[in-house]
Amino acid sequence: MKHIQSDRLERWYGSEYINMVSLAMRNPTAQWYGGHIPVGGATGAHGRVLATRDGDFVGRLPGGQFASYADLLAEKASHWWQASRRQQFGQLNIGLTGLLFNAQARSQVAPFRKQTVGTVAGAGQDLWGLGALPPAGAAGAAVPSGTANDITNTGALGLQDLTTSETMRVAASQGLLEEATNSSIQNLLLYDRLFSVTPALNTTATQSVNGTPGRYQSTTSGNDDSAANNFLMIVVTTVLAATAHNWTVCTYTDQSGNTGATLPSVTGVASAIAARLDHPVSQWFCPLASGDIGIQKLTQIQLSATLASGAVNFVIGHPLAWMPIYHPGGAAFTVMDGVLSVFSLARVAPSACLAIMEPISIGSSRQIKGHVVVVPT
Image (cartoon, rainbow, N blue to C red; front, side, top):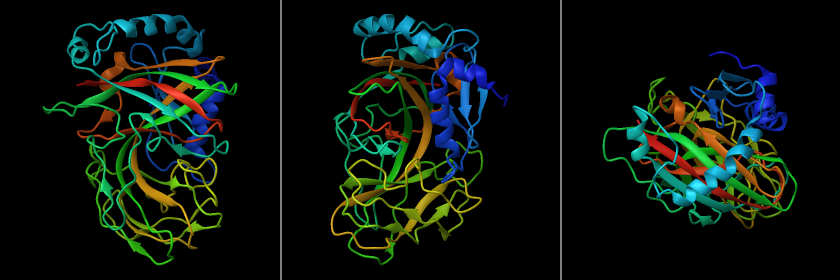
């Protein structure tokens, strides 16, 4: 794909946001090992921006020649919010022509409203266990079985599963950010939550995991259901004891079905609060063994030191799209518009358990409101 000029990207998204996404992809402590991740907001016919593992950007960006994305949002915000009062739930109030009319009529809107927690700036946090819309999701079952997450789970963005052979794709999102600070931007990741499991924290013995995700399990490269790009994160669900710890000999099956791969040791966070990732700052996924580009399933967990209190979840997810939200003072409005390039947007697998996380937190507590739109193709 064609490289996108940096000046055009920065003019459209702003240098702060571009740097935020770039850091999430190429962080020196854990460079993203998978394929490109779509970036929302490439508004315009055939617009599509993809972030690469080295922190670069490729694709097509119709905007950015003169005006910025924030300029466009300021112009359209009033229109979108007024239109949202008139549209029926499940209908996308955007003018489409020809082939897209059918997709528009059967689009689905998944609303969300999350109250994030104030944490260390740069630390990742998962919004799955936070309220209030959808309601806070439950932690995965205990080892060894865990929970294969799907569309029926409380906590998943509210969609109806497909009843035909059609495929759903992310078409747009609309968001509003309210917070006490003057931070200008936030970056969210829309992901498919595949599997979660709760290990014991009062032991340093190895703990087997035998549960299997229900999606993205193919070992064939390029397959829609390929395990490539699946990532693992460790999410704190109950505040941890003030004890230094590492996740040591944790093993998994890789994207090609090879068993016995071992995760590089992950440094945990003493006294980490609920929703924070039990990772170092700026590390939103667990690194994999050299050469691996995805995790099919987790097979073993081990903790270096016992923790007297707290709980964590090991979560396997599949990234779908970066979601930019801007904060031009008081509240932020954003539209992740992809309708005009709908047939090249992120695929939503049947029974997908859509969820949102903040890979690199801006630190303050805030409320995020909005919705994600998916359409059949």
